[in-house]
Image (cartoon, rainbow, N blue to C red):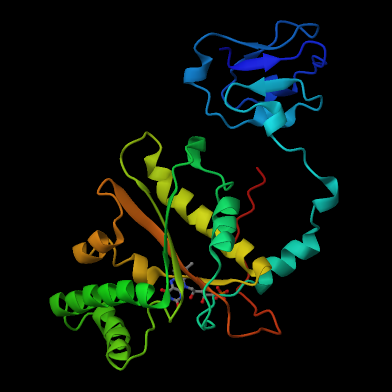
Length: 280
Ligand SMILES: Cc1cc2nc3c(=O)[nH]c(=O)nc-3n(C[C@H](O)[C@H](O)[C@H](O)COP(=O)(O)O)c2cc1C
């Protein structure tokens, strides 16, 4: 089957698809002719769907993405920059959670939204692990604390051990400052060293979690990045094994999630961005 199917009646020969293809796989002989791809282009195509998305006439289908299957953009749903600014500035790291789990369908919605995040080479390599249930999450925190105990034992007196000592001390007093009594832990992981672009998998996983983090408050859900947890995964085999992440994969990020117990009334300030504007 050809990579692209172009409806000759609908095609206006405007060449948008030709200019849009990131790998220059679409050709057009002249401004009167219908674009085409050469045999073998399916081996190079990254299936990004830009050719389908950019055609104003609905003339083009991709073998992996029929035009009819790609929804039209609804102009009435386009958000303004003021809404975006408020969304970004009111997103908070949530560390106090209600005693309530998130319905499965809402977790699925968040992951569904996040799987539209960009990935290097459009590899769509991000894999998910969602741990649910207060006691279940705590079981994994406990393993992260074991890892911290091990670090302290092997590096006594280091700055890291001193800060980990506070976390472990709190844990021993019944205070969970690792996953903060959250009902869910959302983890992204990906294979490593399996693809020419696997160096970007940590970025892809973090980007996907950022999408979750930004979409969550719109659904009344709060999240918090959990470096304290994820940094212990590669260090502690019992934690890795309990998570069940395949041997071929690495954990590249974790978010706790639940319903916030707190409400915010103001947007805190941040340092000014440090930017070099190089204008030639
Ligand atoms: C990669 C990363 C790791 C983080 N790890 C933790 C963590 O282990 N525990 C925690 O309470 N907060 C963690 N945070 C949250 C930051 O402390 C928080 O983003 C920062 O204080 C700013 O607050 P805000 O997110 O509400 O703007 C982490 C954030 C990022 C981006």
